Image (tube, rainbow over all chains, first blue to last red; front, side, top):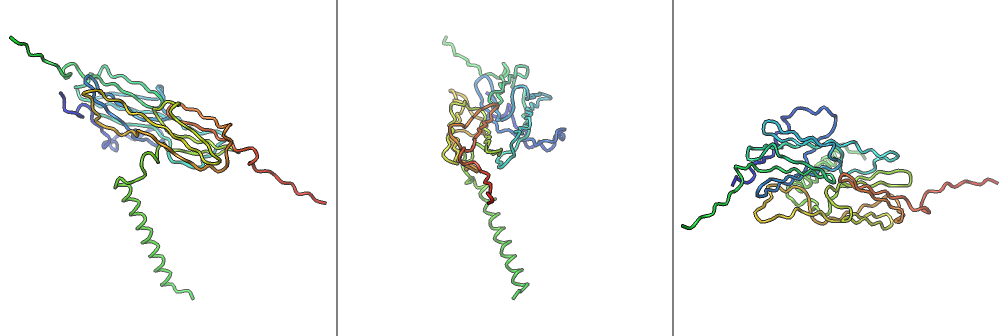
Length: 134
Length: 147
């Protein structure tokens, strides 16, 4: 079986090398859970304010990038009085190795949580070999 | 009598006190003894309107039934719990950054709120709670009678 964590690596540290954003917005790194299952890797990212029509997932040269756009939530007739969180977009990139079947990546968004399913390629799925008795 | 030197000294002392405070703050950030999740999650923003307050909280990935909102006078409490994905045999977390478990936040509002008129909605992982002011608590304009 593949070394845990190798199939999907965070490229968080490289964020500063990326091109500047075209939107004058703050960009946050979403908090992410990554679970390895026997035949796939599941990724959950907290992106409050994002729905399925506002998330972009791109896979280029083995780098999977998730980008969630949040509409500025200004409430008419209200003024901000106290703030613990600020509003911005979300971006995070992960390196995807060929252990992942890159054509079959699935994505859904529910209640501000992005769920990505990354199925493992056939060749890396653990195979059980039964020993036959003669 | 005003002595410049003394003033300078006091100012220095203030600065050291300030530096000391900052060091403690920074130390707290990195020592892992910062405010625990249960008391800092979810983050809450407050918006003030005319005799109404709107509280918004980022609570992604919960079902609205698992959140309890209660108001007592001017104290708003938001509590609930966020579940973790149940792992099956042979499954493992590579990364677990999303907060989970039970949480409870209390926020003091600028006025007493009518608990019967509180309106809460949840969309895209954001909770919106509208809290109108108690009717007989609203400011009244007092006219001065002249003889």
